[in-house]
Amino acid sequence: MTETTSHPTEVDPVARELLQSVVDTARAIFGAEASSIFLLDEKADELVFQAVSGQGEEFLVGTRFPAGRGIAGWVASTGEPMVVDDLSQNGSFARDLAESTKYVPDSLMAAPLLHSSGVLLGVLEVLDPSPQARSSLSELDLLSLFARQAATALRAVLDRRALRGTEVPAAALVLDGLDPADRAAGLRALDAVRDLLLAP
Image (cartoon, rainbow, N blue to C red; front, side):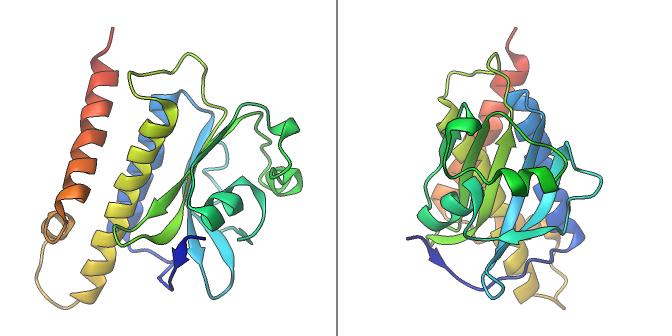
């Protein structure tokens, strides 16, 4: 089971903008109907919608679900990504939870948001990705890169909170203190976006 730890589920505007950019980009890259980021509230044992692009973006942010249910719950508990092409055949899919969001997908991709220390922060989901939206990277590899990008953004915000009261620009906090693996993951994600957007 993935290690978890308490961390804020209410993020500041800098974090919200970073996370929103992740879900917007993931949705565009995969040609999906929606993409979302959940943060884990360990104390309440819930997953909280923190950023949403596409279906449900007007009202889902802040909505909470039990952390042990659904595909997102499975990914959060195992720390493993998952791609499901037919959710009607998947026993982990919680249809009642999907119905409560007013959108029931047919297929889904999900990846854990893991801090570089291995601590689970949340889950990135992509709903109904287009079969035609492909890249040179495998779906899971590309999704995992975006999940790593989101986790890096969250880590920067947590560092920013620790330094609250100092005059440190947010951009510097995103860059400072990141280990080589985090920087490399971010660069790979940007390269993947660039290559896909420039592809004929």
